[in-house]
Length: 209
Ligand SMILES: [Fe+2]
Image (tube, rainbow, N blue to C red; front, side, top):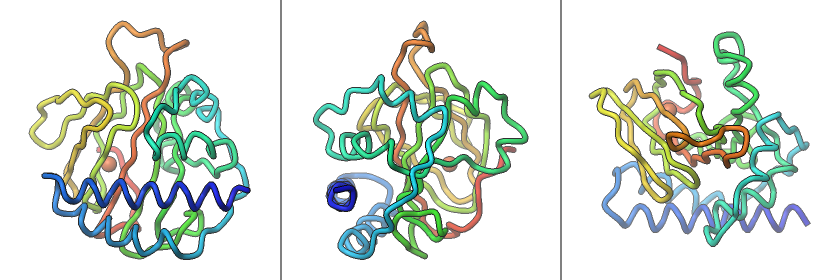
């Protein structure tokens, strides 16, 4: 039953952030872990399935041993996928066909679990995509669940991230991302999957800069 699977995903997320918060990571992860532990045992809204073209890309992924990635992939067809509204007017149709995310926790009616303190989501980006420089008022931690990801924050220095790696950006800090390893065939390669968490001013969407 989907509710049991959703409950399993939220338990895996709570364990994930609890573990991350005890390692040397951004201090905000303690707040995320605390809120996840609280909401993981609370009400979960069973979503109306709303796939996007990018949802199909996840079939190329191996769920592997990661309980967060595995839990998400097992449920992905039944979740409500979305895109940042302003991007639909700005980014190319190629980008929009290969990108989408699911709001797991957050203040909006579309999140599966409601929170006014923390927003958490999982997003998919096809190999070869470049996510242009953008910013948002919330402080953010990204964790790579699958794929090779280039990340650059305010210092403009590109760092290479791999599954298990974390990137952090301060409120309003501009950042940009590159997805996939060089030379990969985007038509066959698995997409990149990022888990992200926001704290602070979580009700305002990202915008390109
Ligand atoms: Fe961001």
